[in-house]
Image (cartoon, helix red, strand yellow):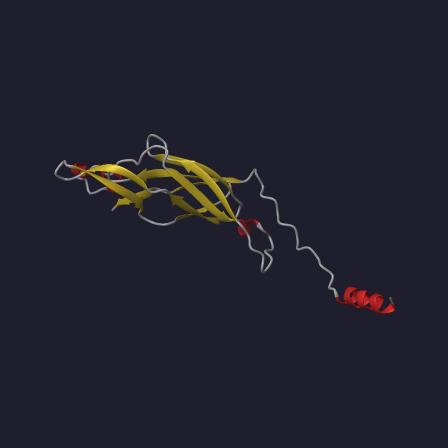
Length: 162
């Protein structure tokens, strides 16, 4: 009995006090930034006459998915070493005009955000007016933007075909 009591006391005295890290700041829902832009894909090669991509390219299908990822660590005043901060994810889609708009949490200081897009399949009119089925992928992966509370960032996005 005395031996077991001594063993329990040894274990208790060998333990370190565990303290919780500082609490993570709650994201201020009143501080938001807007990301908006137009999405372009060259669906018709017969009208590529101006040399200006935004005038020559068409818009991808409405409903094409767009996701914005931000690092939650960017919202923490004093990040703790060794803590695995999660990514914050926000989604929107391309509208009928090829535009997108999304609000994301922000701070007064600039934060980085990554924009990801789905591939899509569409028929592309070739220069000789024939049609071919193509897979369209984002020209960049990911697109990046910097956002600040109360500001709108404009970022156009382009697709390439296979």
